[in-house]
Amino acid sequence: MRKIRLSKLVVAALIVALLGSCLPWLGGTSAYAATPVNPNATQAVQNVLNYFDTVQTNNQIISGQYVRGQNYGYLETDHLYNVTGKYPAMIGYDLLYNVTNAADLAKWRSFIVDHATDYWKKGGLVTLSWHETNPLDTTADAGGWNSVISSMSQADFDLLTTPGTTLYNKWLAHIDTMAGYLKSLRDQGVVVLWRPYHEMNIGFWWGGKSAASYKKLWQNMYDRYTNYHGLNNLLWVWAPGRDDNNAVTSNHYPGSSYVDLGGADIYTQARGDAKFTNGNSELASVLGNKRYGLSEVGLLPLESAVQSNFDYTWFLTWAIGWADNQFYGYPAANGPGNDTYTIQTFYSNAVTITRDEVPTLGRTLFSESIIFKDAMNGYSAAGVSPSNWTTVTTGGTVTVQNVPTVGLATGPDRSMKINKTSTTNAATAEKTFTPQTGIVTFKATLRTEDANWKDFIIYDSSSRAALHIGLQGNYIKVYDGATTLSSIEPITTGSWYDIKVILNTDTKKFDLYVNGAKIANQLGFKNSAASDVSRLKVGVAGDTTGILYMDNVFITK
Image 1 (cartoon, rainbow, N blue to C red):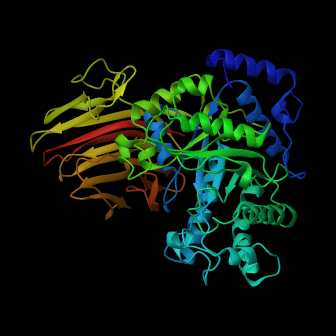
Image 2 (tube, rainbow, N blue to C red):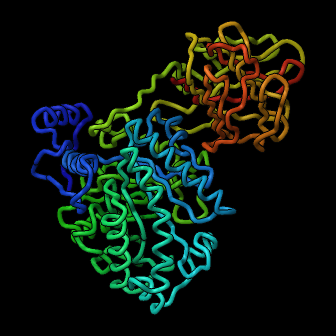
C-alpha cells in the first residue's frame, strides 16, 4: 500500500535521477523489473511495462480516458484538455460491435487505428477492449449489442474453445479479423494494453460460463495472437469487474504466463466506496508482483486514497457523463459520474500523470506547439472585457461571464459572451496572431442562445477567409468553397459544442469535428487564395441580434 505523497517536483527529480543511472524503462534491471509474458515482445512493450513499475514505485497514477461511439475521434480527451489544460496520458477505445454494415465497421475500426497511432506518437499510451459479438451468430458483428449480451450454453462454449470444431473455426475467423487492426498498430510501433473478455466474473456477455472454459478462451486467443499472428506489441490486461456482488478472485485468472497486467472495472456512487479498497487488495492477492489499474472507472476515487492507500497504476474513466457530467449530462446508470471540478482537481494533483509527463519510452514523438489559448478563467471578474481579444461593441457587448458556472479551485469557470442588441453595427471578438502555414488546428467550445446567425471565421494575413462556419437555426453550417453552404450538424440552442478545425494552407482544405466526431472531410477554403492563417473572428451577424458564448479557445500547430 502507498504511504508516501510526493510532489511533482520531487517525482520529476527522482525520475531524472533514475533515468540517468539505469534507464529502467529502456530495459534495464531494477527492483521492480517486469518481463512481458510474450518472450518475443518488442522493446517498446518492455519499456512500457517497466514504466508502469516506475509509476507505481513513485506513488503516482496514469490518467486515462475512454472515447465513445462509432464516430471515433478524440471526443472526451479533447474536452478534458479544454477544461484541464492537459490530455490524459492514456486513451482507450473499443473495437466495436454495432454499426449499420460491414463497410462502416471496417471504416470505424480503421479510424480507431489511425487515432490511436496519432495519440501514441504524441506521447500517449493506448488501451483497447473489444465487446465481441456472439460467435453463434450467422455473421460476425451482425447482431450488435444484443448479440454481445446474448446467451450461449456451456456445451456450445466448450465447443467454441475446442480446436477443430465448427464453432471454434467461426470464432477463429472473427478474432483473425481483429488481429489485422492490431497488426496495423504493431507496424506503427504502437504498444497496446489489450483488454479482451473483461468483466467475465459478472457474466454480462455470452462468455459468462465456467471459469475453466473462460481460461481456455483467453489462452486460445493469446496463443493465436502471439504465436500465429506475431502480435508482439500487446500487453495482456485481465480485467474482472468489482461490484457489490462480485469480488476479484483467482477463479477466472488465466494464469501468470498469459497476463501482463491486471485491472478492475469499478462503478460506484461514492468516491470513498469500499470497492476501491477491496478491489485493490484482491488484485494484489491474485496478481502477485504484476501491476494493475482501474481498467474502467465511473466516479474517480479520492485523491488522498490514491496517494496513500492504493497501488492502482492507471485509471480509465468511462465516456460521456462519467468523464464530465456537467458537460455531457449525468449517466443513465452506474453512478453519477465526475463533475468538472472533480476532473480538474484530480488532473492538477501531483499524483496524476498526464500525457505531457509520460517519457518518450524510446519513441520519436510528434511535437505540437501552442500558438494561442484562452480558457477565459484568467480575467479578473465577470463583466470585464476579454483583454486577450480585440472587440467591437458598437452594436452590443463582449464580456467575460460566469457561464458555465462550475466551481474551480481558482474561481468560477468563465466564458466569453457576445451579446448583440442592435440590428446595425457590430458585436465581435477577434484574435490576431503570427501568420501560420501548413497544418494548423483551431478548437473552441461554442453555445448559441438563439437561432440567429453566428460567425466563426478564420482569415489569412490579407483578410481572405479560409474558413467560415455559421451557427443558425438548429444547425452548424459551413462553406465548402466560396458559395456552397451546407447544414452539416444539428444543434440545440443553449447547449455547448466542442468545435475543432484542422486546416492545411498547402492543400487549401480543412476537416471539421463537432464534439470529437468528424462531420466534414477535406472541404475547400472559402477563398482559395488564402495563403496562411492569422486571425480568428467570432460574433453575431451584422443584420440581426443574438447571444453567442465561447470558451476554451486553443490554436496549435
